[in-house]
Amino acid sequence: MAFQFSSASYSVSESAATATIEVQRLGDMSGTVSVNFATILGTATVGVDFVGTSGTLAFGPGETTRAFGVGIISDTIPEPHETVNLALSNPQNPSGGATLGTPSAAVLRILNDDVAFRFSSATYSVSESGGQATITVRRMGALPPGVSVSVEYATVGGGTATAGTDYVATTGRLTFSPGQTTQSFDVTILDDLGPESHETVNMLLRDPVNPVGHAALATPDTAVLTILNDDVVFHFSQGAYVVREGDGIATIEVTRIGDTANDVSVDYATSDDTATAGSDYVPTSGTLTFTASDTTKSFEVTILNDGDREGNETAALALSNPSNPGGNARLGGPSTAMLMIIDDDPAVLGGGL
Image (cartoon, rainbow, N blue to C red):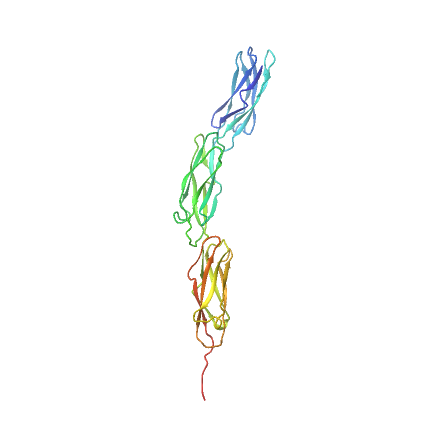
């Protein structure tokens, strides 16, 4: 005759008080026989996840099955499924010939039924022209077969971004099946084409649902989405610049507003107003390139001193072709300016005999 477990594996929910383990007797049924049983450590911890137990099962004449219980300790901690090893030993038959059959060792799997939800990060960022931001939510804790859990998400006020202007407010519920540990939702970003500071959207998780156990929120259950401004505007630092004819050089400053994350550029050029290129100044044109940290750049206009008393004159300045590979670029005011050349030649005094 032989003794063996009815299965090589058993499973029990963490919230169940007891797991029932069945042992079978095979062969000769005529006498009273016995076999020892015991729990042995697996990944579960005795005294924390289960109650360690051992003893002897006695089978009366004709009795083919007996069972023993393993006490299960429930907690509210989201964790993996855990295991307890089970073993039979010391088969006894007064008539002789008692052995262990197969399986004489088995595994009891304690199925976690507690979950928690959290954002994958406390901070996210997206370019203003990116269209949407994808936000990832993680589930902690294994699930029993066939069980799905869920959590609600929402964008909320309190950030510096404005719903309907900078982003589309959103709310919904993410459902996790047993094999899913991450889910995501999208926040639609609205590109307003205006240079501004980076802005923030606050997000939160709420109302976790678990039909078979405990559900909670874990840190971080709130997060911040930063919308990175990628718009840039170029303009002259002032509407008019003044230079004396004898100074030789006029320095013209151009200002960049908005995005400072990308290298951007703008073209500049001079043209005649009352001053004449080649006589009063050297015509110039080119491109100003702003690196990621630059907010101002300048170009120079060479002034020609002709020695003639001719009064003050002006040259026109203009910006054109703003470029921003990372977003939008445009010209702001003033995008045209005047350069006044102050005549500093002395008057010629006439006389006669």
